[in-house]
Every structure is written in structure tokens, then in C-alpha cells.
Image (tube, rainbow over all chains, first blue to last red; front, side, top):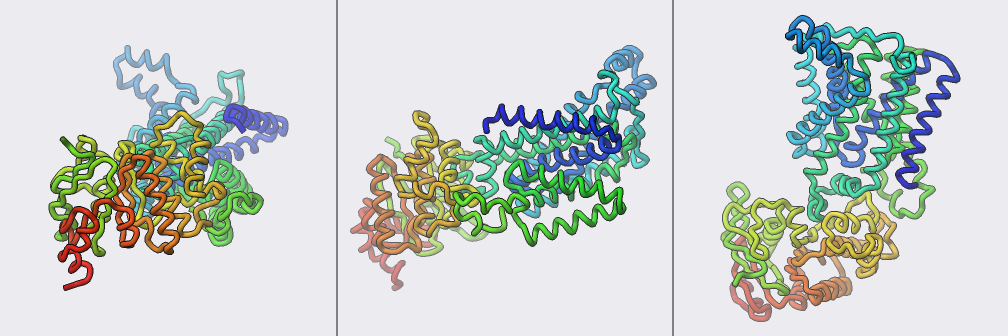
Length: 342
Length: 238
């Protein structure tokens, strides 16, 4: 399928989903759906670096939190400027702020993209488990910074009061956030698929398989890896930017939570890391299961569930759900023989 | 006059171990150089210094009058220095055709033909076109070697470093690879062949360079070099 058609289809599916949720009319559906769709973005973003390029990022929480805290910082700027800035500056800020959420998403994405680039520059010489540890360390460093940054609430956290409706057609705020996240998910999937079929995607695959051979084939590995961490980080930050408006209260421990990292890894693994469909399948199933388990059993049970499912998949279906369909593609001989994916 | 490739007094150390000691080799365009030596003599280190995996502590390498210092491996590939690896390093998650596609996309210069067509043409040259959709895991050893070579050829090199492209192959398979390399040489590619299989080296090279413990001990006409007492003692003992 050609890219423009695929893109259009992704957007139509997202719009149809939104319309279906409106038709069902259950408010909780939007609230829970937001989290699931947010994980579609996160898992897709993680897979661009982890699945396509073979670098396991454990710092998803950090990128997500950079997006979230960028929003908090900008949200607080209006009040802060009234008391601390010269009146002229404060007036300008009062006109511009509060920034619309799409703008906050872009800012969050830009910031975490830059963080991704910096992290990449520092850590991409490391491979395998060492890279994973370095990304985890990044998350700890950033969390420590935020805990000690009083302006965004430090370890107390920050409360954000969102209006009940948006200025956009008087839309319900949760509906609005859900629609934005759906759009972001569609865009992430379009980006992921676009990368897959591109020269960039082939370059990433060659890096994943063998970096020395990739260089010998003329692939500028460092440059591609940097671009990859930046794109992946940016999408994670974008997923985090509307988060403060969604929960209303942000504090470091939950925003930097390891749960994001674990889910970001588990979802593509369960779905299959080879293409855009894997993270989508994985995040939809695991994300929904988590939401259902949180309501019917307990939120701790939902975590346990992820652990058990991840272990089961790693042992029994190392190529994820997509691996179940490999048998239907006899053309790619050797697929079954290679077994455990990358 | 400057040579096509000049390895000018390079020294490469790993900690206290001197892998290459003041090596000077000058290669003219179109030459077929056989680089031989016992295990650990530094043959692969030469390849790695040329292709940009290692950088020598002393000395310089010039390719077509350009100093290669500071150029990364992929930049050297794009300049026209291709290599194959001693142990085949196929891109395991990509099909055979995609394996060739990567260098075509990143280092290929011929944009006249569609990339699919170029892939097909290249694979036909090593009789892998029927297996274009296979994954490397399903290939035999000799096919992996051919894939390794054709992936290097896909970068349209002027200089090819064939690092033990025939290790572990049977007699007829060796002949096949040598024929392929000779054809490549006829097409104008300068080739440095690193090899243990003497029959292959002797039938291919028009010049032989011998390394022993990181030092160059002989360089010249293959028939003369193999009779050199120093070379004989290095290989057979005194």
C-alpha cells in the first residue's frame, strides 16, 4: 500500500474510533481509552529505536516526563510571570498563555527530541545491555533534577486545573485530549511505517543486524542512530505533554515511573518488533488488559499481568503475535529457522 | 607520481602488542595483490586500518592522493574502498536482495537503473537471484561468501579488500570465487586478497606481499616470493 493511502487510512480509522466512542457515550471509555492510545504512541516510539535499530531504551519514563514537565513548566509560567517578571513581559505572556495543547505537544516533543539527541551522543557507543543501563541512568538523573526543581513542584508535585471544556466548539476536555492522542497515535504509526519502507529504515535494520557490516556498506551508523533516538524520544515526549492536563496532578515518582519503560518494552515484544503493526497490536491488547484488570481486580494485578504475559511471550513466542503469521509467508525462506528474532 | 593506494609506514599497536610495525605497501590501479602471512601476522589489521575500523598510531594511508586519516568506515566505502569480512556478516533479518539493497541505497553511485533491477543484476552475477527472497540463515556457506562479496561489489568499489573470502570452502567452490574475483579485476577493480589457501592466492595474484609478526618480509612477483627463504621459514619453520 502506498504511503499517502496508508496515512489517510490511519487517520480515517482514528476518526472512526473517536466517532464510535462518542456514539457509545460512556465517559469512562474516553478516560481509559486515552491511556491505551497513549501507549500506542509510546510503544511505537520505543520500537523505532528498539525494534528497527536494535537499541533497547529503558528511559522511556524520562522522555515521557520531559514532555509532561515541559507542559507543567509552561503552565506555571503565567502565574509566575505576574509576580516575578516586569509588567511588560508579564502582559505579553498573559496574551500568549495558556498555550493550546497542540503547541505544548510540539514543545514537549522538541525538548525530548533534543534530550534524545544528547543521550544518543553520549551513549550510542555502547551496545546491548550497556546502552540499556545508560538510558536507565538518564532517567534517574532527570528525575533527580525535577525532584529538586521547586518551580515545577519538586517532589510535592504540581496540580493543574483544567477547564471542563475547550474553546474548540466547547468540546469536553477529556474528549479533546483523547482526540489529540488518537491523532498523535495515527501520526506515530504513519512515521513508523514511513521509516520502515525507506532508505533510513534499511539503514536502521543493517545497524541492528551488524554495525560493522553496515558501515562497510556505506551506512553512516552514528548519524542514523542519532536521528533514530531523536525521533523516538520526540514521540515519547509528545505522548507525555498532554499528560498533566489529563491527570490534573503530576509528581515525579509516577511521571518517571518505570512502568512506562516496562510497558514500552513489553508491548512491542508481545506484538512483534519487526514492523509498525507489532507495537500497535501489543499496546492495544496489553493496554486494554491493564485497564480492565485495574478496574476489575486491582492496579497491582495489572502490573503482574504484564510481567506474566511478557515472560510467556519471550519463552513461547519470541517473535510476538506477528510471529504467529510468519507461517503464512513461505516466500521468506529461513524465517522459521532464525527463531528468536533480533 | 603517486600510487593508487599508498600505505605509508603505518604502525598499529594494541596495548603493548605491535600488530603492524612500520608497514609500507604501495598498490597501483588494477593490481591483484595477494596478502599472505601466518595467523596473527597482521593481515586483517591491515584491512581494518584501510577500511577505517582501526586507525594506525603512526604513518598515513593515501587513496587516490587523499589522506584517509579521520575518515569513518562508511566514508571510505563511499570513496570506493570496499571490504568483505573474514566471517560473513550478512544482515540476518533482511532478505538476500535487501542485503544488496542496503549498499546500493547508501553507497551506490549508478542511478541510471532502478534499484530493484540493480539488485537483480548483482545477484545474477553470483547466481543468487533465485534466492533473492530468502533470509541469509537459509544459505549455504559458499552462498554466504558470495553474498558477502556481492554486497561489497554493490558499493561500486575501485579497491576491494577480500578478507579470506574462501576460508572453509571446497576446491571447486574456491575456483568459483577466484573466477569471480578475476572477472572483477578485469572490470577494473583493484583487489587485495587476504588468503590462506595458497592455490587460490597463486592463481589470482600478480603480486604477493608477505607479513610475518606485523612486519613486511617480502613483496614482489608471486613465483619469486614463495621461494624466498624468509617466507619459507616463516611458513614451514626453520
